[in-house]
Each structure stands twice: as C-alpha cells, then as structure tokens.
Length: 168
Image (cartoon, rainbow, N blue to C red):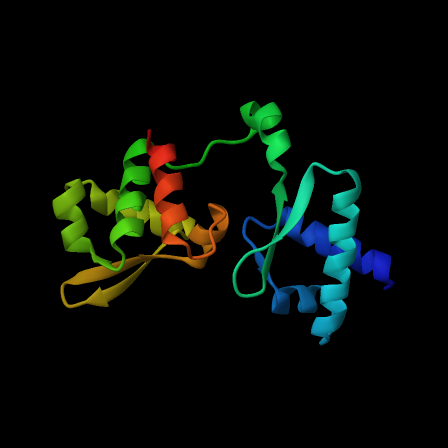
C-alpha cells in the first residue's frame, strides 16, 4: 500500500469506530511497526481536514485519535445527530458516577434509588462504566470509552460541565 492509501485506511477506521483509536491500533491497521510513519499519516490527514472540511482530527489523551465534527457545523446538523442511547435516569446515574468515582454501587443506590442497578447494567453494556467487586458490592468508575465518547481527556471539570448540560 502507498501513503495515500494508508491515510485513507486510517481515515476509514476512525470514521467507522465509535471510540478514539490508539496509536498501536492504527499501526496494526496499516500493518507497520513505525510510530513515526503513523504520525506522518495522521499529519497528512490533519492537513487534508484543515483545507476545507467539516471534520477535524483530534488527539485525545495517551496517543488516542478520533475524528470530530467542527464546532461551526454542529448547530447546522444537530437535528440529524443520533441522540445518546441513555435516558434521563441513566444519564443522571452516569453523572453521579463521574462526579464521585470511584463510588461503591451500594452508595450509588442510596443516592439514585433502586433503579440505579438497572442503569449501571446499561452503562456497563455501553462500555461507559466498569465495575470491580469489593465484598458484597462493586466499585464503579467511568472508562476510557466514556471519556472518548464525551470528548474528554480525563478532565473532571469538563466532564461535570458536559453532564450537567446533558441532564437538563
């Protein structure tokens, strides 16, 4: 494969993925062991988007890369953007987990009520929350997928602000 085809392959992978992709994943996709080569491909892709595109390439935390819609296009197309699969209750539950993480599931149930268990199950299925056993309860935390999906780089202030806006 040539450079242009590798750029297009990386672009296709990022478009198709529902989460940011790591540098290692991108190296595997274009079948190379060279981080320098993949960064060169990412630079070319970024140049392409800087010219005249509604998309931009974003490096999140820890060498993770994703495609995002430019802010100036968001208001024009927001009516056709699929809504999250989370209902209001699940979103509020996710907000509590993000605020207080790590949080015991039993403590979460005290705050959010008995339905919290149902919401946690849904959040785990979506990959937004992980649970580690601790005695008879579990300790809940948000995941990298959560941070990538909501466009955060492990920045709790941004997480709190975004979740407050979404929960309104």
